[in-house]
Length: 316
Image (cartoon, rainbow, N blue to C red; front, side, top):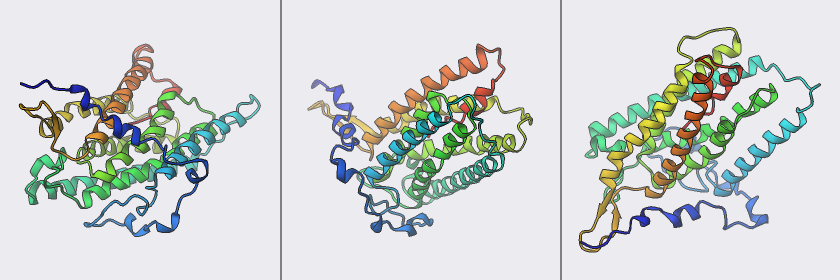
């Protein structure tokens, strides 16, 4: 049998392509908003993602958004760093923001469940549609609209961080890293129509329904105690763990090795985005385990004020 080059599993060229190296200083800040088709924000069975036409999809726009997010967060932290500067209450705004995300997450969760059910029962792809969109017979449609809505929601979730900063609450690295990179992660799913993205969308929106409901309640009444609060972080750890377990069906369907040449071949769409997502999921899992140990184990199971907002650093 021919020697297999397992290093070829690392999509080096794809990872390099994610960097905005094709832009110079002037073109990086030029986004052609005139081509955006805002009708794509409306649910459609014929949804088709087109970079530069689908709103918010331009590569340089995404990097501009991430850069602007980081710059504004740390600039605000600097402005509010003085001991005499008091944090804002933002009680009503915070409650409304969390309620919007709770309802938005519920809508995406119901939407992806319904459209996956249709794929499972009314197409030849069956349950495999949750993991693999075959290159030989890819599927399309409203499932990927929900992927797109999930992507759009990540821009809105930037507000999470600004609320924390304006309240002068502790801001941990896990939170910043998550909000910065998850926009890019979900964006990679869209051009190729990565079926496995439905797994992350399903799990993450389910967790977010409860998480943002909890933050909605505590925004209205900080003294409220909800018994399942401590399970939110456990649920997020379970979510990341399951993402690795559920990657097995994708890998079994996607990867094949030629017995003659030893060349590794891919049968499903989106190996590059899948690899990039799983690497980041591993980083998230390590950070969440560290957070969980510090918050719930080393402190005798009692959550600190820091943890109440820190647990908003969640995965896709």
